[in-house]
Length: 280
Image 1 (cartoon, helix red, strand yellow):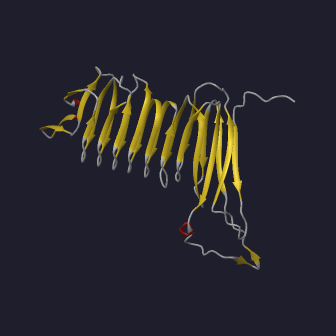
Image 2: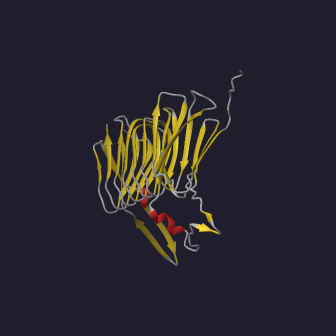
Image 3: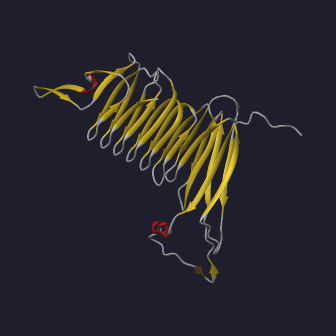
């Protein structure tokens, strides 16, 4: 039997239909996705509307995707407002469609997970090789947790927390209404990073060797650090303009300084929360 190698696309579609009175409250499915180039760096992209996303790095060369589907409560039926639901029609029994559907696609070491919102909320738990970047987004009913990966990471959560532990590389993180907590083991020294929230604390721990130019602003909170930071005037927050013969200078809030002589730009910004920049 010939062995199939150099797989360019892996497509997994999961569709489970429960009929009649068989109404499952939860279900779990797990699939192993081979990579086109095992042992090389890769990337996971997961953008969803509802649900948690958990990503964990492990000592392997494949991506393992576990989907945990949970049926929404009875309020989910409210979306069908224009048409009254019927249990039967013309003497025929209604077959209830309680389907869970998602897609995993792999192309050249980039793995994309997608699912269409419906009657289910799907949480994704994904194991990836340690040298893997992540691009993760969720909006409702979910937190994002990332552990033990090294890469270039972008993470966004509208209504949940972002927690990243034992991270290597660089991060751009945005959590609109909750906290951001990140612990780095190693960093890309020459890469700029940004951490923003509206209604949450930003708590980031860096290696003691961090070299950075820090800009931090909290409108209704405070900025804390245990690094030795050489503070300076935040010139980037001073704006000048001329209009109708009026020269105007506006100065926004914020603190700036350099750590270990300066380096890449590190921006921290929140409206209602504290900013904590820790050394580990």
